[in-house]
Length: 99
Image (cartoon, rainbow, N blue to C red; front, side, top):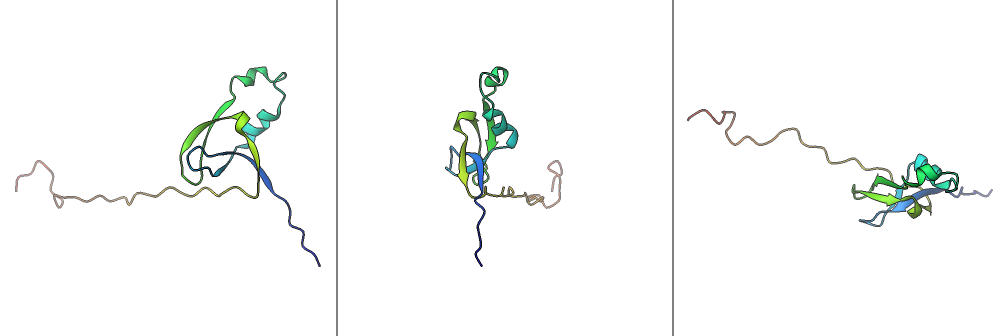
């Protein structure tokens, strides 16, 4: 019995900050596949912003920078959540109250 691994690829760009592969939304790479002669109106909009799943930096990329990567894209890691409480140096007293 042999197991065949399905070869998976995705379209993306290389992060300008950390060099990790970034998944590009389908609408961006689908528009980049259309020949430029037919797609003159979209030629002006050949730059898009995308956020890196590794370093969380958002940068502008050109559609000409889109390449095909082997494997699966990195899942987007959640941002650190604020604790919701902040230290109160006055122990519940407002700043206008004299002690």
